[in-house]
Image (cartoon, rainbow, N blue to C red; front, side, top):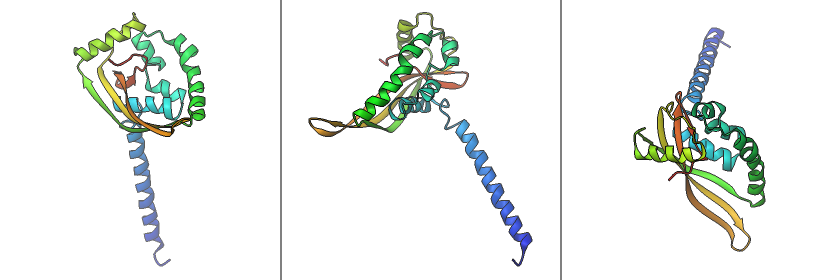
Length: 187
């Protein structure tokens, strides 16, 4: 080595670039790419948790089944979560494997609506069917998200099949975090 000081400075610069990149990626991961950063992210993670990864914990984090969201909205979903939702993930994983069924997200989009819009009124009415004591006063924003997906499966009679479809979710923002409400059917 002709100039060890120069090599050392280059190594320090490279290390600094990697450290800065790690910080930037960390910040982006906690903000723009985070599960609850946008209605698109929440909807995509909800769909992924249900149909691709069969990940109950991720599902809970992205949805109103999250304990903080459930409490803020006064949804009273604990019995439903423990008795139906959580066990359904094990069943779903088995069914997807048994049916040789795979899902791929093709795209996600979301449209925000004002809290005095007809869409929000529809959401509130549908929410109150299952949760008559729901509190909506803490909702900061509202959106309807769509997840376009492709499902591939094998049909015993016709062989390999591919179906393209869209799943829609109501999404609410509480304390700056977005959650889907998959138990409320979008009208």
